[in-house]
Image (cartoon, rainbow, N blue to C red; front, side):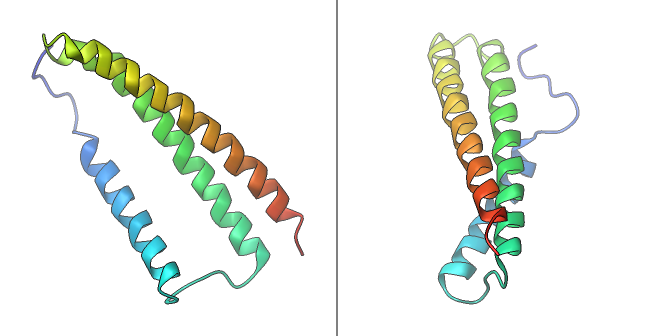
Length: 107
C-alpha cells in the first residue's frame, strides 16, 4: 500500500553503512589507518563481498516494491534501472570474491 511503512525505513541503516565505509576509505587514503598483514586485507575483502551482496539483495527488493509505492509511471523505469544496478553489484561482488581468494594466497 502506498505510504504504509512496515517496520523501519532501511534507508537509515544504508546511510550508516555508507558513512562507515566512506570514513574508512578516507582514513586509509589519509594514512591514518591501513592493513598490517595480507590476511587483514583478505578479511577486509571478504567483508566487502558481504556488503556488496547485501546491497544487491536490498536493491533487488527495492526494484520489486518501487512501482507499488506510487502511481507515477516513471517508477517502472526507475525499477528497471535499479535492477540493472543489481546486475552490476552482483558482478562487483563476484570480482571481490575472486580478489579475496587471490589475496588469501598471498603470504
